Length: 296
Length: 291
Image 1: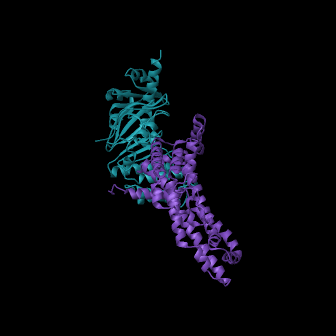
Image 2: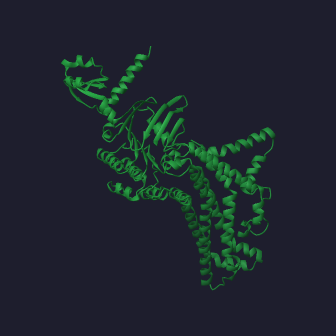
Image 3: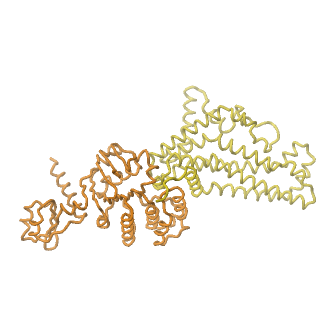
């Protein structure tokens, strides 16, 4: 007789793999967008020698900004893709399996609802940020190599390029930014979307959007205040309160601006921990709902 | 130890009572047929047993609470309660990979052998398979799980006659190889009756008939009676009567066999005929009870 235990790690890893099979956009969307970025950059390569020549005449700050700009844009575009894929993934994750009745098959397998929800939550919190970091690093690496080749072919020095585009620093900053901000900081958003996805029997997007809107409206009418809306906005967009990702730091628009001011500062923010507690509550509720959920 | 133990199992959906106080005791090593008309509560009862639906009353499956311990039970209980639940995007190979990855009792080679008898390609998506093939794939997965308890709800829906027969033959030979318990609900009684050890009839949420096949054989007799002996036969209180060509078929419960033999040819009634007898008896009883 076969052994009767499969380790938790193995069940989790197969559950995550299952998500990747079903939602190929998790890795296809970044690849496609990265390819588009590279096409655009390839066209810009024709004017690169002129751009670099013009930039060397500028002060060091401006030069840094001009030369690094395409790399920053590539990173930001892929971040937007990460957010978009994460939102669409979450809203369907616990809704789609009930709609297509597959939940009845998954529930015949020895994987608990809690583990399933955890595997699904790990996609926006961990997997997508890592995929994005990888896609960004590869894209930026190709951009850097292609630029070097073009400059060398034009008999120009690559020193200004490499000096202003510190590749490994950029990858590190992006990794920190994606894991801390897009993963952990945004976790309550993903948790909420997963909860709406587990709850809704139709129109999960509406279920995700209406309650926060309703709370905001009721608060506005009842107390003429906007604390809830402000709180949500400030958490999602950095908002008016200077949090760990507070108002954009004045200074050049470079990859540096994506770095947290300090890890200690980030970890000390009460908003972070409140958000994580909220995430845990949302996921626990989603798991409870999946327990009761059947095919629709 | 009882594999399935239920006392006063109930399940309501709003005002509708789907399962209305079921008592069950199913031991190791039984093949139980659960037979009932549409809407009798078969699926609800089976869903409660495999942990897909909450319920009222007492229910233990392999000494566990199926609602609270579905995932733990799923290691030892395999089930197919709906034939159209494999997701369309899943590839055949991925389905096998996944179950092999997470299920401690899944024997991949066995599933491959089942699939080998079909024309299902490993790289096909479920959405590209015909309905019958999807069922074949699902059955191949379920049958390859070395479970202590197997639960099937209309497992052969949409399959051709040949494959249905293969499936029940495989179920039986697996059962003979390893001690396990099988519960199967189906409308195709005639296909399963030769492998059953027990038979349960369910009607309007209640178990109305529960016998082992030995009991059925010893208690029930079916007699082919010619018209000239019909009056004498009816005097022995048959539980059911139906018309054949040139004779009547009467079913008796607990009647003296020698007296029956005088009336005509006797044999054990089929489960299907017994089912009709029990159900029409109930219907007549209910009608009579209405003032």
